[in-house]
Length: 335
Image (cartoon, rainbow, N blue to C red; front, side, top):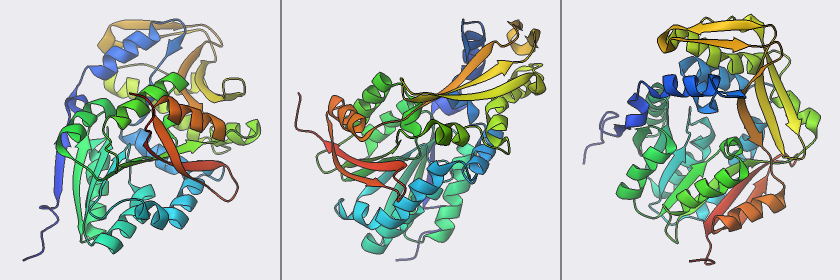
């Protein structure tokens, strides 16, 4: 049988959420007319935001990427061994898929073929990374799903049976508050059969100085990334934000176990946004909340899993003990 071409090995599914033109505008209006003001962190990741985040991942202060890559490089074989042959690999928030290459290579080495289903809101990033992977791995087939997680999961629930390994890497769970994290893990559990596994990257509690440096680096790349959401409003909605009149703020709240990220107005100002027919007033020192990043203790990871009716079967840490990869299976407890 002739080998399939790269084009034949790639299918792209574009969900409505990846095409919806009014979602950004509506959420900007709602967030900037609320008190206190806020903008959802998922809107960081337009093409420029995705480029900036890739740059952040290489920063010396941003330990998360290196720690996760270290674990993946050293433990991928152990992860693959937990799945039967013929497993499908599904990744939420795949981005460039750089974190996943070790797993892909291990599955292909064992099984010869692999179906990989990356899910990301950025269609351009998905297709770029998919083409690169297909050039590198001959036994790989990719179904790329462009859309938000909840909508993408309807495709995953309908079309792909066990055995599956679902990946949620980086520290994406940290963007959800603790009840939201439990609820989303419950949704993922709904995709799983007994032989399926869920691999989740979870950042650990640590010294405030280490955490704050990771989200406010010396080169100012994280500040650019945070401010890009204002630049996106300018580009897409006719906003008139002067980025120099906002400061990036990242502070660790130890009681809540989270890094809290804001943009602070340095002066009194009023910002027109033409597409929304809106003028947004800021007082000096007024904040726009853009992101939280929750950190967990090992005990909190176990408690979160149990609340979602999952069980931690393996946990791997990097050599410095800063970051964790956690392998979950369905718990027998509960209805």
